[in-house]
Length: 128
Image 1 (cartoon, rainbow, N blue to C red):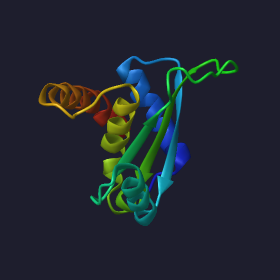
Image 2: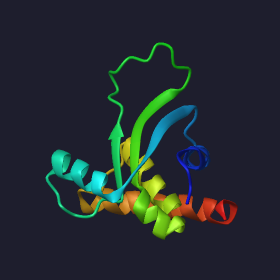
Image 3: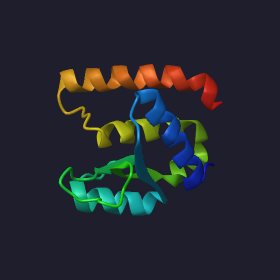
Image 4: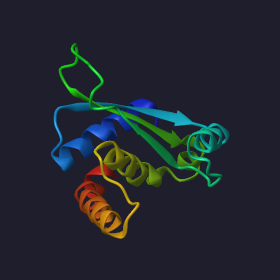
């Protein structure tokens, strides 16, 4: 299973593939129980969470930052432990949410899914 540091490196590759530079984000691994509690408290959903993203508000000041701060991504470490190959698609999905993509409406979902497939195609060979 990847560590948070490994996932940070993977996130840098994803940002490069998306053409987003310079930027940083936090990646946090949590056990399934903590992810479920977080999803219930914040979204009132009881589905098994695999990724939850919190974008940094655009108005939040970071005068010391040399790179744009995107926000936080929480990944379910129990899912990644069982299936490490899911790290790339889950991290990418969370990062697209930080960049403003959504899948609430059909058109948005199709656009986000297409971009996910393009990036996964670019990184699949290099990631292995």
